[in-house]
Length: 322
Image (cartoon, rainbow, N blue to C red; front, side, top):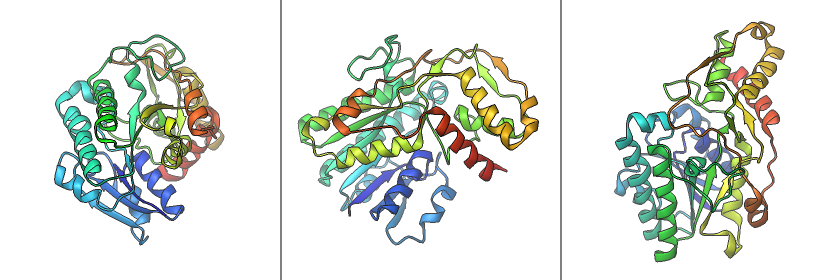
């Protein structure tokens, strides 16, 4: 069994990773400052002797060095997400996503961590109009957030080449699922829409609803992180992978799926009107991933497509938001 550090482990993706690897019998260290993560996401793990929480900030190098002691693998999820948040406050996004990332790389290098696996982002594709998105063809970033995530990839590559630290970047495409927070100014679209439907409030789609995304269920993301840990293929290391499904769903289709699944649980939701607002700054019009590289080099096969994932997610929210 391995000792795995999960930064941002109290967040949506991080807490799901904690749960999965604890169930596999690994030792888990969770580092989180609870800026966007929640203590209730990891509360069930406190009684597990294989779970350790370090409450701290990746912007503090000493904290990062403490967290990596004796660690085999780092799953770096800690970041300030959200394109709008980065537009409103680019300095803090840069401090966390770039300076904090560099601290974690330095600490991991100095602790002789076996492999550093990090959350990259589909926002790196920027203004590239090519579909599907292929890892080695990107455009110019469209937001401060996108810049920070691209810089992460550049730093990881330099640390691999210069210091021999094994790194793998996972470009997440619109991840959704259990524990994704529906509250706050920067809530992701799926949990936000679910909460609004459950409260008989009209969800507001940005723009016409024709923008499309490769919505990726959390179980597919967990699989990619696990395969990134397990791979022994030299060709599969020190590179980046799209972490997605390879399907494209418009926002209009997404909202209709959510309404359909929720109406089964509460027939009154069928009468809730769907509204449209202005387009959001920094948004990419269309996003669709090629997952050929992940399939070939990591043996990745998504277990959930959009409808299976949404049905499971809606069931979880129905049980936990009521």
